[in-house]
Amino acid sequence: MKKIIKILCVLLTLAIGGCSAPSAQEKPKDSPEKPKKLSVVATIFPQYDFARQITGGLADVHMLLPPGAETHSFEPTPQDIIKIQNCDVFVYVGGDSDAWVERILASIDTSKMKVVTLMSLVDTVEEVAVEGMQEEEEEEEEGDAPEYDEHVWTSPKNAAEIVKELVGIISEKDPSNEETYRANADKYLAQLAELDETFKDIVSNSELHTLVFGDRFPFRYFADEYKLDYFAAFPGCSTEIEANPVTIGFLIRKVNEEKIPAVFHIELSNEKIANAICESTGARLLLFNSAHNLSKSDFDGGATYLDIMKQNAETLKIALEYKGSAE
Image (cartoon, rainbow, N blue to C red; front, side, top):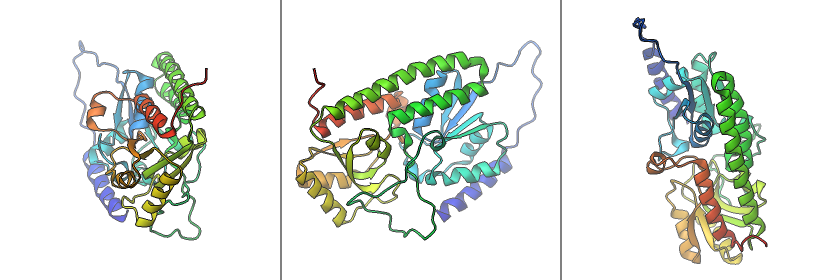
C-alpha cells in the first residue's frame, strides 16, 4: 500500500503540474461551439454501466479501470487524474480499496463536480469471514474501524437503488435532458426488477441453497438478498490468491458432504483453487461474475450488467439444482 501511495503522489505531481488548461483560441463567429456533453467518470464497471444505461448516449461516460484489469491492483495514470478533474459527475465505490481516490480528490478542485460513492447510496454490511474462509495474514489492530463489504451492486435490488439515486444526480447536473434520463432509468429499473424475480424463482425452486467458491467471495449482498449459504476461500476484498491446504481441504469436504454439483470462480481469476477442488470432488467448474470488470472482448462487444447477471442466473440453476418454476 505504501508503494502505491508513493506512486500516486508522483502521478499527482505530474498530472496537476502538467494539466493547466491551454489558452482558448477565438472561435469564428459563424461556427458556434456545440453544447458540451455531460461528462461522467466511473472507477469500475457497475457504475459505468448504470450511468450509460441512464444517459443513453447523451453523455460522455468513461470507465477508469481498463477492461481485463484486476480491480484491487489498479493504479491511476496521470490521464485518469485529469479525467476525474475535468468531469461533471464522478462515481466510485467508496470502500478501503478506493483509498487512492480520496487522496486524488483531496488534491484537486471538486467544487464544480458531483462526487458520488455507491456505498453511500445503499445500506452496507461488515465484511465477515465464514467458517473455513482464509482471512488476511495481517493482524487487525485494536481500535481499527470495521471493514465494510464494498460489493453492493451484486444484489439487483441494490443496483436498482443506486440507479434511482444516480438518475437524480445526473439530471441535476444536466437538467436539459432530465426527461430522457428518467425515462431511460424507468425502463432499466423494470429490467432490474425482472432480474430480481428471476433469482427469487431460481432459489425458491431449487434443491440446494449453498454456494461454494474456490476464490474470493464478493457476493455477500447477493447471498443475503436471496438467503443463500456460502463457503469460499477468501473474503471479497482479500488480496490473497493462494489458499493454504487447510482451506482447500475444508472446501473439498463441504462439496463432498453436501453433494455440491458445482464450484465457482470469479471473473479474471487464475481458477487454481476452484480447479483443485473440482479435481478432488468431480464437481463442475463454473464462472459466477461479480461484474467488477470484464474482458476486453466482452467490453468491446457491449456486454452489460444485465447480460452478466442473466448469465449468473443460468449458472446458478446448475449449482442449486433448479427444478423449474411451480405450475
